[in-house]
Image (cartoon, rainbow, N blue to C red; front, top):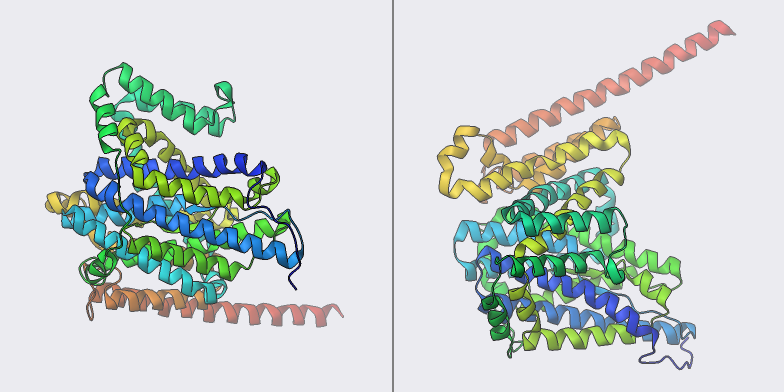
Length: 507
């Protein structure tokens, strides 16, 4: 029953919460721009399409969560309700940058086509999350955590931490110094001067060093100012134009999209649950649907990154924020995207100053994959990480040096194709073997046989009987695991009978 309450549009506590949320989203936007420019994408795509599209998603989600906060305040007759923090999911952003956009660009060598494919992937991810809001809990319960987090850790170690560490050491007087600052401030918990957040302090010092030592020049400042202008937020058909490639030549990217979307929906679920524990209980299913819809809306306007409820919401609650910080965040990011402020910052900040943050994010994901699981599941986490080493080599080198890659091992390319599916299945089978649940392990092996037969794994494209050797191999593995299950049952029965005999003798 709704009650009459004076729930304010804005209060002074919203100011601190706004800056905390703004910094988080701004960091993501700058990283997106710097990384894409470093990959070779033109400014017309980065600042004219991707940034405005991402801003649309951020605006829509923040405004809707402000509406949800107002609805909850009226329902419960409270004025201390805090709106959910919302923005681009940082871990998922890196996976889309290095696991979707980079492979698409490497295989097509066409920045606009790669952008369209990534936008289609984002739209599909949003659609899946909206649907997962109905069945997400069931799917979450079927895939072992060690398998899913291990697969994501493989992406983090190769495409995020590893790739960015190369950039760190390309300009050591900038990158290495910045990396140590990140380690000291974020890992060591040492306060930076003037209590500036460690990541922001590192970027500032890295940028200053780059200019002072001549790695950046005033031309970059001029370029940054030149990028300031008007960038209209316009819809496009890119998501639908890229969908055809996503389901044909680049179908292997689906192996990245499905698990990372599931991860994103679980991240939303966990963060909404944390907010409920803090005092504001929102509908998890509605939040997952909002995140999925926001992602799709952003894709329609050219954005290519899924969105989520932030963990920082609990911090905003502790600050006493209401809904005003969420509304202000939507307005500011809309203006920043349209005026090119983000474009200006991206041109001034060198990639070597940002790369250390990504190195830390990558190793944090790897660390979390182990910390979130019992010690006995560490082998499952480790084996789930390995397929992405093959995927990295295949993506980076196979198009230009295929003979060299094949010379290293003929298994690199097929292992790298559909690496996320392979990683999750190997991880899941290992988990169930550890738990002696051989029937479940056999089921996952059968799923792998089907995926290989259809070309989702170990094949360059979808087709009937696309990877026959691998389909047969997984079928044989399934048969062996069923045999193990049979042996386990016999062993259990025999042990029970022996215990019964010992009991009768003793009596």
